[in-house]
Image 1 (cartoon, rainbow, N blue to C red):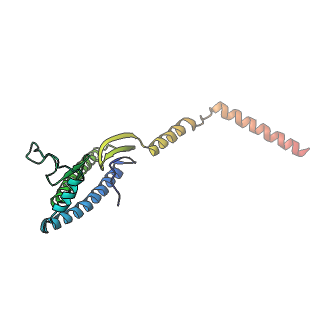
Image 2 (image 1 turned 60 degrees about the horizontal axis):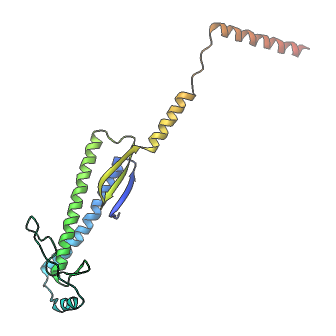
Image 3 (image 1 turned 30 degrees about the vertical axis):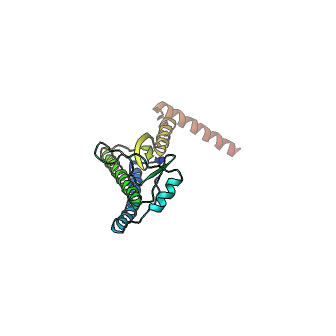
Length: 202
């Protein structure tokens, strides 16, 4: 099973190869999604743990709570009040904090899977239209999602084209001799044979 990188440029010899790679990426994301979903389900079913003592330690170390705000759709634009900030890095000892991390991770994974599926749909449309024959592709991927594709002539196709061009220009057919040239050639051949016979008799 492959691993998805934050940023990557991969080479593909065909659209079919690219499509197979994206399918493997989806399988990789699905495996993580299933794991996170099971963990989230266990947390939601379990009982919450007290974190007062841990919060007291965090405060003593200089951690501060971030100011929460509301987004356009009513969702929290920042983590809940159970988080503490230390030089921009957030910490939480509350069970709710872990639940928030899982919810956010699952949301981002589902978004990545949907975008990869959309890319596969577009690739399928291009294949049906006959695009991609004799071409290779350099694909820029962000978190496994294709964002840019550089198209170039496939190396095998270029080599085949050069070979066909060489054969067509270098291997020209020999012109057929005229009747006069044929008679002249036959005369020369007969003369050579007579000379050889004379030398043999001597």
